[in-house]
Amino acid sequence: MLYRHGRIDPRSALGKMYGGFMMLGAVTVYPIAHAPVSLVIATLTLGVLALGFAARHLRVLGRARPYVETVALSLSVLLLLLPTATETLRRVPDGHPLVTDLASPLLRGVHLALLAGFAVGLVIQIRALRRRAI
Image 1 (cartoon, rainbow, N blue to C red):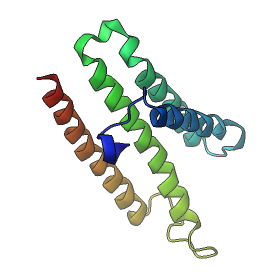
Image 2: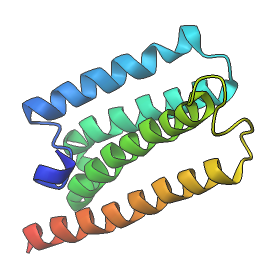
Image 3: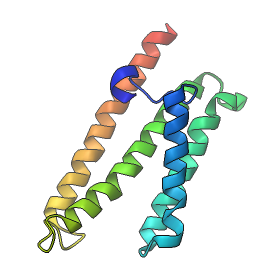
Image 4: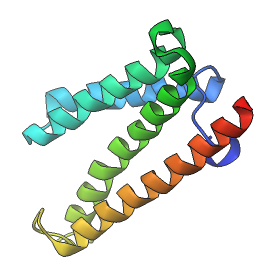
């Protein structure tokens, strides 16, 4: 959806599926997580998903509703990618992972690249929303 539509549309069938699967994934973290940071990320994910799906109904946001919706749902993607990248680098290749320490320069570089991609993508999304509003 990000590529095809430039954003996650919570009203579309794919957007609803995304929200449902993200919620399912975030909720399943609670019984299996070992690190407290996992619980924090799962809780943040649930919070931004709720905000993203509720934003269009929050009249108090006024004209900012589509922006809040877009930022929140894009942030949920980042919150999915950060632990995914971390766990992949800590487990692959089997027996000799690329990263053994959370302070690893490789891991920090990957996290920084994901954050930069998020920032660039958000700028593109906000510009597109502004163009549609004109």
